Amino acid sequence: MLSHNELKELYDFDLRASQRSFYEFHQSLRYYHGDQIDPVNLQTILERRQSPVIENIFKLIINKIIGYKAQSIAEIKVTGRQENDQPTALLINDILKVFSEDINYNKEIIKRDKSLIFGMGVCELWCEKDAEGDFFLSLKSIEPLSFLIDAYSEDLNALDARRFHKKLNMSFDEAKRVLKTTPYIKNQRNFDQRCILIESWIKEGEDFARYIWQDEALLSYEKKPFKNGMHPFIVSKFNIDEKGVWYGLFRDIKPLQDYINYSENKMMNMIGTLKAFFEEDSVFEVEQFIKDASLDNAVVKVRSGALRDNKLKFVEHHNDIATISAKANEKRNLAKMISGLNDEALGIANNRMSNDAISQRREAGLMGLQEYLNACDAMDRLIFKKAIDYISLYFTKKQVFQISDERVGQRYFSINDNENNRIKVGKFDLSYKSQIKTQSNEEKLASWAEIIKSFSHDPNLMSQMMLLMLKDVQSSQAKDLLELITQKQNEAQNEGQSLENQLNLENMKLELEKKKAEILELKAKTKKYSSQGDLAHGVAINQSAQNSILLENPKTLEQKGNASMQKAGQDLR
Image (cartoon, rainbow, N blue to C red):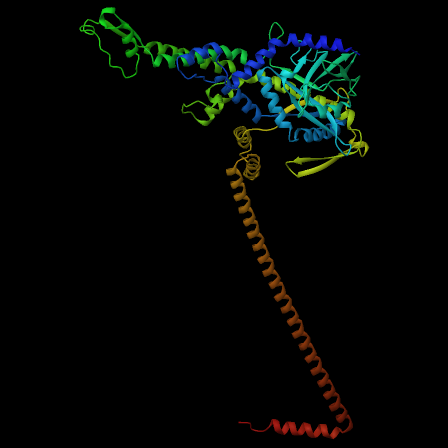
């Protein structure tokens, strides 16, 4: 454990080592916000009764880079190196998605990106508890001017640093509540009392210890605040020179920006001025002539023959203005080249080109940003790597999370409620890959165009891919078209369903008529067979009766036979 005096000496030593970097960072902020003319030149311009002119090329470049980066915020996905690591990787990806979908995540990343291009980006990642005792991850971007790194650190990500210092300006009541002690007050107001605290993380042995102190006394000490013995900071420097000073893009743009501003103010002065040469005997009074000739609408009397004999000569600055303007244009183009951007990437190109050509030139114009994008990507990996360390160390009890899924919408998942979803991460179990979290519509359309070309031979698949593309592209036109296609599909489906129902109804009617006909046929056959049976029965009874009579009276048969024979012999004509 260090003493209070040792902490102060280390802090002062690291502060002196960072003074030049802080000065350059602060100057870049001044230039970004338009304070670009030094006091001496500003006083000269004002004495001429001229309005100061600045052309903020630096802000234009920074805004374009930050805007491009904001459209391409990346997130880290982990994959298992072996098959049995895949379930853990999927579970960690879901937890990381909860972390990256937090409302403050994108805001803090954009602040980090802006600080990084000015020279250095610093983030602080904490594992906190909510009111229910569940852990969650919180990310915060730190102002670089309030953060000190070990003076002997040479790594761009400060991975070799053994100490960090963060300066805090807190309210007195909040500091008293957090520290559970009474700090010294910086201001002696009766309202909004503030106190300045310094939080130092010092590596003692293999672990980082946390000190909170003021100039007056040491307030708090923690030997090992995190279970892994690390600090909560993630650092990235844009670049480091031979003297160990970190700096941003401003160092390369500043000389060109100063020349452009000087040229603009010089040309403004030269446009409204001229040089006059005259012989002394060509005017009546020298002082009066100078005073009158300097007016915008001047009528000045000179001696006879002065104009005829060319004793007066006025020289304007048109040629000098053209030369200075050309040099200023050269510096503008050079500033764009140094920043890695061309006119297409800056959005100021006015030449007529096809969309593909413009897209290709824009992509080419962004290639110069690769160093900056690599620095952001490396820092993102460190953020998510530290987040996974926290997850494996602190997320040990049953916990339920909610995330947004593109396919199923809002969904819930839990951890540590059975052996299959426990978080166990080994040193070599996972590999880290970055992917774009947000893309511009142009990038999405270009990507979809290449995919659709590859599957253009299958019309059925093409229609489904078009629907996926329209869902992916975020524009009002795409939503309207998707709604129209969905409406047409529903109408066609309803129409087909209606036709199918009608056919089913007709089939049912035909089947019913067929059943009716079969029933009638069966009834007719039954009636026919019944009548035939009755007739046969009657004939049988009649025959039986006749047979009985004949058997009883044989003479009757003979008489009937003779009668029949006589009747048969009658003339029937």
